Image (tube, rainbow, N blue to C red):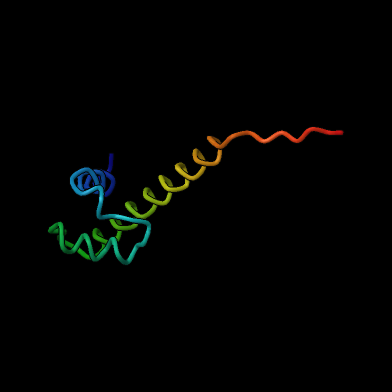
Length: 76
């Protein structure tokens, strides 16, 4: 696992409730929560977290759609 992914997973495990699917907000959150030595690494971590959060929200939306009751129309 590369450094970006490892650090991203660690930060998300420690603070799962503060990240979302907005890149700019995730960058600001990282500035407050973690000491990241470079701007480039911080942006990579924020990008990875954003991508992961978007994927999780899409997965939850897909599961919500599939759990609904099936409606079958009867032909007369």
